[in-house]
Length: 362
Image 1 (cartoon, rainbow, N blue to C red):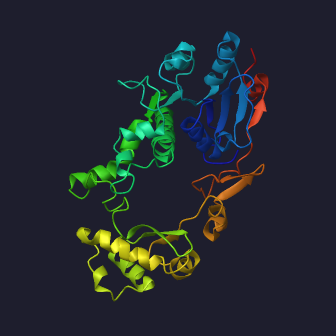
Image 2 (image 1 turned 90 degrees about the vertical axis):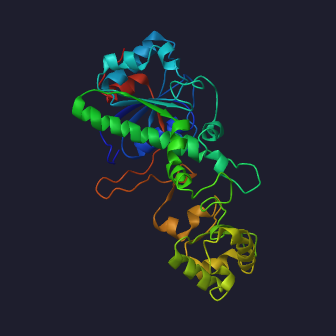
């Protein structure tokens, strides 16, 4: 494949969620990723996270299959696994054993709670991992329950993306030292790290523990979503004074003195009600005609069907279709080594993949 990671070889142990997403991102960028899956595991064309790799079905309880995995590991630059702590060791594929076969191997471990700590062996999902970071508490409306932000914060942001950063950082270091290392990526750690700015605001006295009453959590009337006359929604984020002034001008409230003191937090609830009345006076498309593309920090709230058709997304080819499945295109963009278009995952025989990597079959 094309891309800045062309030539990089990664062994991925099949899982769900963040591990596959990390492998997908690296494969999108050109890495040669071989996914080890259970015997009989079929390739689902709707599994977007599995794109752009070769799949090999191996029974890891079979010593001969494990030896085939070691043959791949000996030629790999990195490994990705997302099992509970101790599972890979019980399979005879733990970091020490693998690095004894390949000293330069970077061993990426993706878990919810990390490799150690009181919760390390407990089951969980994104909602649990972001709960203990403080992030989930902050998401939702004032006086209402916290709202799960899909599984973006733990699985994909705090988990997969930071695992990718960790792997690439360790690979850079291995290029200097000649030695790999273990990357322990915990979603609970990552969700906490993603909250760094908010903890800074809190330390400065600029953020309270009251959900939905702060600058970026929907508390501010100028940073929120509003229903329009047709029941659709728009999003505004006019924080800076010059952008707020443009919002007022386009909304016809520039001369209304009640909106003059933007940062008067005591007035935010009332101003939110007033601005809600303003946005209910037109349809979403009418507001787009007035505000979209301006510096008023405005955007329509698009659903899953509308987003791929938006002119900006269309112009950038932000979405692509693969085997009839609409999905996000690789990101970010590279001007000299652009990523290739995603391809469907390909099943292969162990012998064929080993041969491709220059390793004799067992």
